[in-house]
Amino acid sequence: MNKYGSLILFILFISCGNQSKYPQKNNLSDDNVQLHANVYEINADSLLIKTFISLPVSNLVFIKEDRGFCSSLEVMIRVEDNNSGLQIDRISDNKEIVRKYYEDTRLNDSYQLSYQFLLEKGDYKLITSIKDLDSFNTWDNSKNIEVDSKKINLIAPYYYDNELKHYIHNEPIYNIHKIWFELPRYNFDKAEYKYTIIRDDKTLTTNTIKDCRNNEFLLECPIELSEDIFGDIEFHIESNLEDSFTSLISIYDDSSLWSGDIDVILGVMAYILSYSEIKALYDLDEKAQRIFVADYLESKDPDLDTKKNELIEIIKKRYRYTNDNFSEYSTGWSTDRGEMHIIYGPPQSIELMVSKSNHNTHRYEMFNVEKWYYPDKVFIFSDEETFGEMELIKQF
Image (tube, rainbow, N blue to C red; front, side, top):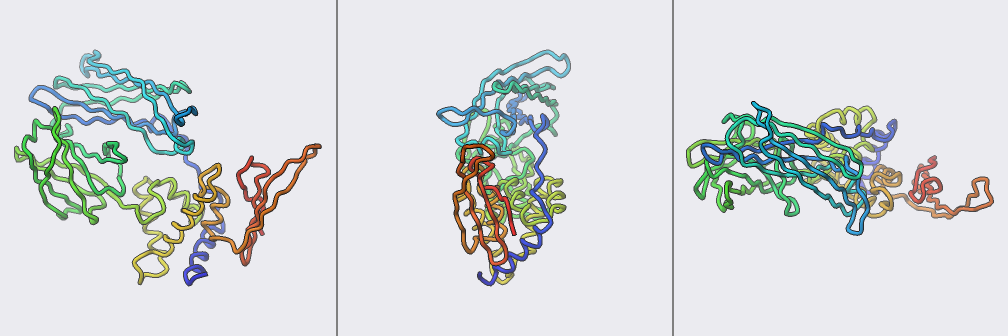
């Protein structure tokens, strides 16, 4: 064991001594189906309203097909006049979400649906209804649109992930080095615009936006971000009318951790923290959770004279190994073998056996057993009761 091995094992062992499995989040509710709207003035009398519905993937039922796992949705979104209650416009649509692996359908990420309306200036109500055609579950939501210059979105930020556009609506984003903004041509009608990036009332950079894409009503303009652009950032963009429009975005860098998925981060941290600590951590919002994890791991850095945190590097290495080697049924890090490997590292030796059991019948069934040997402990795993997944059955 290297010079950091004993310290890492001590930290993990002491922290895990009185904990059980990490607590599971409650099932997602209708409140998790979010309805957002970007509202632009496109001339003195008209509005462009772009609507976004964010639907948690784990809410949906997926059916296995040849192309992957598929969820079929029926989407309805309508616009009502806020004063009269009359329907002004309506869109009905059928959508299919296809995921490659079953594990992808259980993640807490969201699928974003996008639609747009061209309307006369006025006060409106957006009403949406989504039906899962396999489970027949329905989720409803609504949002008021009021024509007030202070409430209209004059600039809208987004980013690309695997060539898919993701609009940013108050949630933090991670590992992003280019932000795009939609600018209404009604307020922005030339090729270059001055922008300023501010954090904690301090100007980080001032530059000019170039290379904007031009479409019918909007400009799409990129801003490159340097490595020091992170945290709660204000983007100020000046139009040709000498007005300044502001967007606040939270940007963080998770590249130093083993995953960008907050549920995976918390799952692994549950092996390190005590039960009371991880339970309290689940009560925080996502931004506070990430800050807590970063601060905790920084406080446990065993060698402050090096640029890297050796504890994080060991966790990353063990995390990758578990996913590569223990992911037969569940994701490797979340299995019993994955948990023991992340906490204690690789065993000194492993004994593999095949056993028989008749369960009080005349039929014998074969099952696998693994014994992991460490200098001061032994773990025994078996798939006798789990249809192939190795489960911890004994330790001493």
